Amino acid sequence: MNRGIEVTELFGIGTKYEITCTRRQRLAVVVLKDGRRELYAFEAGNNGDEPSAVIQLDEDEARRVAAVLLGTYFQD
Amino acid sequence: MNRGIEVTELFGIGTKYEITCTRRQRLAVVVLKDGRRELYAFEAGNNGDEPSAVIQLDEDEARRVAAVLLGTYFQD
View 1 (spheres, helix red, strand yellow):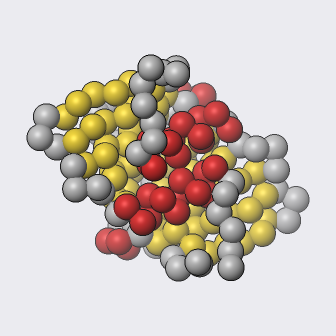
View 2: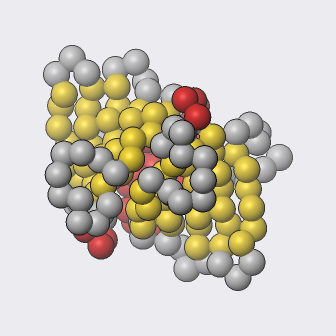
View 3: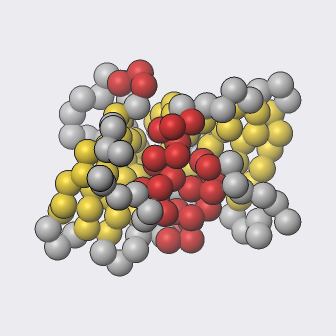
């Protein structure tokens, strides 16, 4: 299923996944070749190239954020 | 494992998961009772309550973002 995700190969850098959300917000995740992820958040009305916020995640952080998003994160 | 995630119950609203990332960036995910997620991104140096960006995700969008973060998203 590819609905709503645009995938772009960034040669030598990694892969960019761009998700257009409801309310015209955009979220781009760049998966770098070394495993780090960069999260680019574009708020509604921000149609440019300059993100509203950039968050860098290492693999462990990315896994934890994913677990929260999936609802599979539980505390010990 | 609870390293790096602070969980706060927001009475009547949902649950907030706050992740402090490397480089002093913060990411908060609020899982609302109706299944929607709100992503609050705080860039480095933003130590206040006002996020640098807010992105709203429905359940399907949250699943897709999680798959990208986990590296389990594949195109058909």
